[in-house]
Length: 192
Image (cartoon, rainbow, N blue to C red; front, side, top):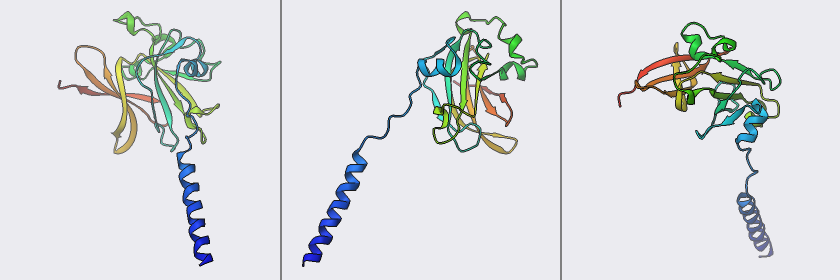
C-alpha cells in the first residue's frame, strides 16, 4: 500500500514538473527592427513596413532572413559591415555591376534605394548569429511585396523570394540562390 502511494506521488510530481516546465515562457527571440538592420548593414539602411521572412534560402538547413529596407548608399558600408551588394535584376538584363547600377536613376523617385537584405545564418542562432555565414544587399529589384516559396530551377527545387513587381503589368518574378550568387527570373504577368 505504501509503495502504491509512493508511485502515485512520484507520478504526480513528474506530471507537475513537466506541466510547469511547459508553461515557462520560451527565451525571447531576436526581433528584426531598425536597430538590428543598422547593426548588420550600416546606418544608411532603414527597414520598410513589409514584414521580414526567416527561412532557409541557401539549402544548408539553417534559417536565413530576408528584410525589405531603404538603403541610401548601398556601397558605402559594404566592406565595414561585411556584406556583398548584388544586382540580380540588371544582371539578368545584361549588366549588373552594382558600382554602376546603384547610380542609375529610377522612374519613381520613391523607389530609389529600395533593397532586399539577406542574411545567411550560421550555427544554432541562425540569422541572429553575431557572425552570420554571409550577408547580401540585393539592389534595384522593382518589388512592392515579396514572399518566400519553393521554385523549380532546372529540375531542382530551391527556396526563392517571389516578388510582386511595381509597374502597370503586375509582373511576378523570383530571386534565388544558385550556390554562388542571387539570380533573377521573370515568371510572367499576374492574371488579376
